Length: 175
Image 1 (tube, helix red, strand yellow):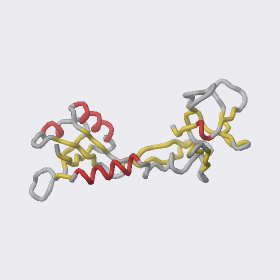
Image 2: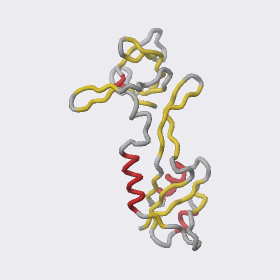
Image 3: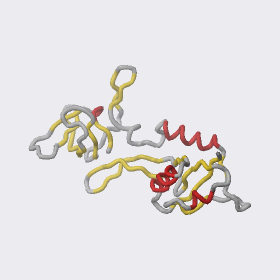
């Protein structure tokens, strides 16, 4: 098995990844995750780091199956006209950096985290207006918008309620 680069149709990374997985091929595309503001709410969004490129692990000579996947436009070719092989260590370094959260600007820069049994707060907290999911407690799995801060806690308004509720930053994740 060798790694190659597939070129996806515009904004079709997920479709191509799902199609490749359906035929038994591993695919990977590193993503940047950041806060995006729209209509007075902030949401965590993912964007491809390498544009329209997706790494694909293909058994040698089985390129026809990849080209027929929905969302894949073709394979990146070398000067000789054959699909360009990518060294496995390049792909693994990208995967290590992605899994380490190097490009995750939502988790790396916001909130409170447990390290060594104590809570550590980061300077860049979850912004007001951010769409978050509450993880534990009475409102577990609730998607809500942060409305403010009070006494070091996040303020939110659950649906159907008339007054604000509060939770710690460690209890919410970006949605």
